[in-house]
Length: 228
Image (cartoon, rainbow, N blue to C red; front, side, top):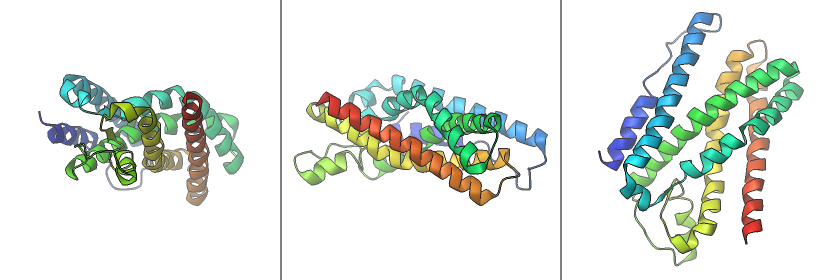
């Protein structure tokens, strides 16, 4: 299967579930079924991404798929991230510690295993269809900039340059990952916190993600500085 077709299949699998229109706030059974379907879709996307990446060594040898570098670190950081975001939710929304922890846990698990992989897949598709799947050189400052921005989702393997390219591309990817995480987490939180005004939920999830992504960025920069 060709590269564009592979990602088209993944995207279609991720889009198999669409909630029905209408107010579901009091339809507990429908909500439970919806969350279960989302979990199944998450599993499909992550599993198929892994299988297809290992099944296509030619593409792996030709580049660095950054999802498989960034996602493991974010999974490792998931517990402290949940702790920080539950504290933010409790403080900004006046929630009990238990409800804040439950909300932060669910929204972070879904945003990490669903939102981030889907965002990365979309970025890879955009990169490939705009010509970013080829080496365009890395001799000038502009070429270096494009190599870690335009080509950040799937890095071209300039092997002598990867020591700085990987952390730089990680920081670039944190920007779309931030918005994907915020979108997913807001959607989850507003379903779980029905009595809280939507504006307050949106603001709280924005602040929570801003803090945790800033800390992740500082960690990446700190690692890079340590390695220099």
